Length: 236
Length: 103
Image (cartoon, rainbow over the protein chains, first blue to last red):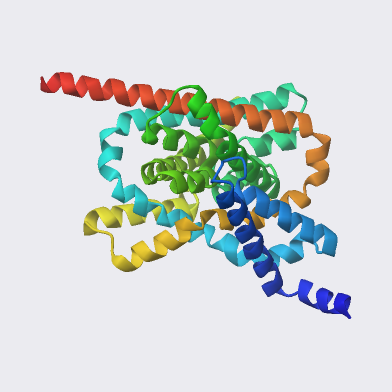
């Protein structure tokens, strides 16, 4: 009886939505209890929980996504909302406009070219390095770019999320290692390389870092969407 | 944007438009600030559905674990270091330069 109830529940969109939110709350609770260490990233914990439940209950990803897509849809409005912290810190952003543009374009080029180069050198397939090229760009944008290049949008989305988690988890340590102390520079670096997941982490630590991270994420999405397909066609 | 044939996604255009709107308006309306804080305060949650898609690509990721993992980790960390160092150095330099002009 329990199983029939469970299979009944597991096809309901509400179950998939609740599962996602519950997994996130557990991830957040663990993250907070551990003193917000970047190592216990709440997105990472939530994804591990969701994937485990789907595997254990034999629910297909397609069925799950159908229920959870409402949250995915909110990524659009959330990206638009990044204009708010950006506006709040516009004074600082305007003062550093040249530094921001030069650092961002360099960082963005380094992220894309080194990812493709390393994957190619280590024998990755064409599909994987095509899908790796826009990996530092926020998911909805990256999926659009990969489609233009001829890669797999859903694979790109997964690589984008992994990139975001790596940047949010290890980025703060790298920045400490190379002596980057200013909140503006820390935020800009995290946002350029690890988009929204890095920005989510930056917003939790310092609002100025969050504003610069959100700005970097938005500008990187804009520049990469315009430049990457052009550069790609020139090279290949 | 489809008109221009560029894959610039709606949300990024929306962010730019809202930013321009705020500049024109000159303040953040209360209702907007509440919605924005709610969305951005739980931004991490919104990445979970797409992230769970790792299930679908498990076979490819397993087959190419070395090139993909090394590419993601190294390129992300190098990009963070380069961007952060450059930004800190440039903003300090440009700041010093503008102070000298004033003197």
